[in-house]
Length: 290
Image (cartoon, rainbow, N blue to C red):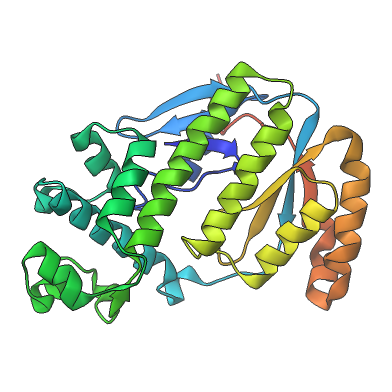
């Protein structure tokens, strides 16, 4: 489940097997409202954002060729392995599950309860192939050839605790974000901003999909008046999204331009198209000529 454009997006959590949200919001978006997007089956729920704040997109001007690296594929595999060890630890058929959401559904537990299960089932230190295989009752060769994807078979250690904790906590933040929007307390903007900040910290420290430039840009955005800021997209480059009080927008834009985009040739050259305020817009449509 994902809230687009929550924190513009809350990634691919609670499945973490890959995309879907970008494609879904492109067609399901409606002007003036964010969307809570759920999969299996696909469902989109309107989420009215609070007034008085604006979302601002900032491009870090860093790009990673995901096809030429294994970062994303390793994260997917770590989540899959975490799924299987969680299932085994709770007496489920580990061969029949592939996503962390599968374990939650079979155990019929809340996201908060799943976080407690993660704390019980995993240690924070990376897992070796031998340890994972031993927990599952299979040898490392079978684990490598039958479970690991071809592009992760050379990986020797996996961070299962960190990835599982991030996935369940991020999914919980998505639902908390929606709840705050629905209830609309007086401090809604501050509460939503805090969730965005928690999200970036988790992406940086637990899922490890940030990069120094994104972290720098998030810090600059917060110092420039944003109440919340996080990376958006797959990470390792790309953009941040920040929630900025409407009355601070102009000053915010000026400060971020000065602090981030005027420090380098590439950033300076791209700055005109790299920083802008945005509102939820309508999705793609098919227009027929009669």
